[in-house]
Length: 220
Ligand code: SF4
Image (cartoon, rainbow, N blue to C red; front, side):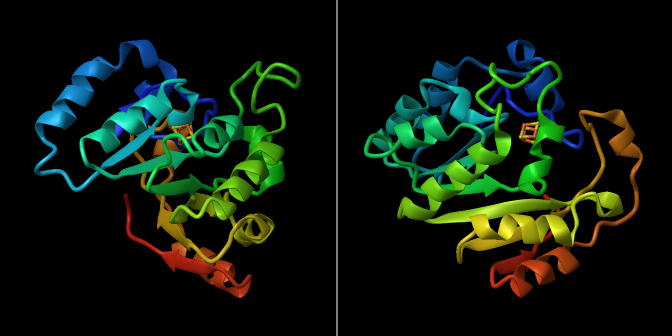
């Protein structure tokens, strides 16, 4: 896993607190060149590299990073929240990842709840987060790149069957994994106090009801 710091969302349940809030001072962070050097030294024992975050599409060098990992003979999986479709489009025909995982967090019309404070219309690339998500999902569906969708089953049905139904038009036949949320190091500390188990299976069942490949998966 290559974790690139910084994100254009602030999901309250996010467990990459330091990566999102203090991207310039990540404990145990190492410079990108050193990370790529580390990968190069381990290329014979690695099956591939997942480029994650934070939100890796915020890096203008993302194509170069993917190209350099490919140059080591390793496939790349890209994790994205779908809020930066121009960056996904820029990868077409340049440094295409070998696999893409698109996070689906809430019903599209609820994504405004996840924007950083003070990032209003007219300024932010995610000023229309529902539109950005739809555009990214369309790019991924038509890319020919193997892909999957990932959702967290959040406590208190915060993300419920109506969200799954609203997201379904964005999803094709790729696997759509639903994992239960587990508290710990959340961006909003209140989320660490949620203990109620989230029901991943009922969400996966709703996805299947919508004709999608919903799969309840274990905790991350
Ligand atoms: S969960 Fe992902 S998209 Fe949300 S704030 Fe954390 S890193 Fe960003």
